[in-house]
Amino acid sequence: MGRYTTGIGRYASELCYALRRTDPTLELWLLNPYPDTAMPWFADFSNRRLSGVATLPGVLTRGHTELARAAHALQLDIVHDPCGVGPFLSLRHGVHRVLTVHDAIPLVAPQWHPVLTRLVFRTLVAWSPYTTDAVLTTSRSAQRDLVHHIAGLASRLVVAPPGTRWPSDGELAMRRADAERAKGAGELPARYLLAVGNQDPRKNTARLFAAFRQVRTGQPDVALVLAGPDTWGRRSALAAGTPDGVHHFGYLPDAQLATVYAGAAGVVFPSLYEGFGQPALEGMAHGVPVVTSNRSSLPELTGDAALLVNPEDVDALARAMVRVLTDHGLAQRLAVQGRRRAERFSWDATAATILNLYRALVG
Image (cartoon, rainbow, N blue to C red; front, side, top):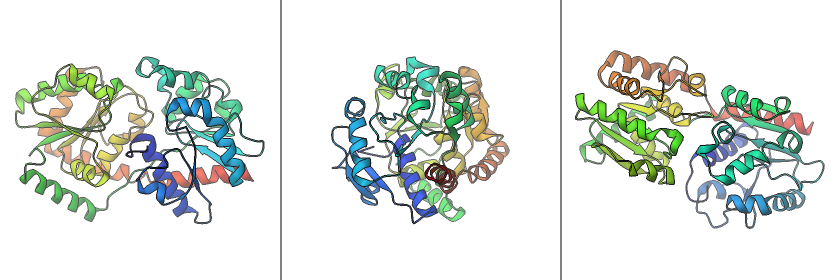
């Protein structure tokens, strides 16, 4: 979160702005482990520096005492950890503790996570029925999995789906015009499918590449654009071999990413497991047909506004990608239904749910 905003950082920053819009009287402090960051989010709110907790090992060893000191010094009523860790063991009595756990992946499929993350879920997250006053999660699917794996959590668990930046019709038209200019300048492929994310193993990049190879046999002019930070997962996927027609854009700032969404012929998100599925929601918000998985939270998120496929079936994935490229009636229907469905997911609605929780805790 200190260099650029993705995933949990996006959740935390958008939630802060939405909380302030929803209740301007709420006093918000960022307990900031990145004091040297240039990100505007940190400058827009009151900050207190936390020392030595910019990495997960630091959070585990120093986070408990750092949070306790900050809560005492600032006289906080609530400490909310949006990062899914919950270093709350040293907090004094009377400080209400809220934890957001975005998914149950380290419990459902631990092989997809490093040892430290698995340790957090087997200890601090597993202890959350006893160390927190409330736990938030992002979907009913995640809720079911967390309740299944963590005894005693059900009574503390609240579902508050994240929102998205839903562009107006006018904003979307401008983004599409920007995308057309970028295509004319050679900065974007003329016709492309878009995959957004960090490409760790559960993002299913190897099967996406295999499906895209099939797509290219009948649609040789179509490209596949990958947008997301350069992580170990992406490097591992690329080492397995990249098909012709794949373009790696890396991390894109918000405005550029919105343009790339708007210019896409389709968004492909064949993840093996999600707690929510932000790229699918963002694709729908930008009026782009979405192909995604028929498992975990994704059917709940997309409803009938996306093509759902078995993410382990390469042939089915390829067929769905071809359909959004060639069946213009289907693509238009998905684009319209997706826009309509995505409009339901606002950050202000997320903030309202969480504010109600805060008020119930404080009394």
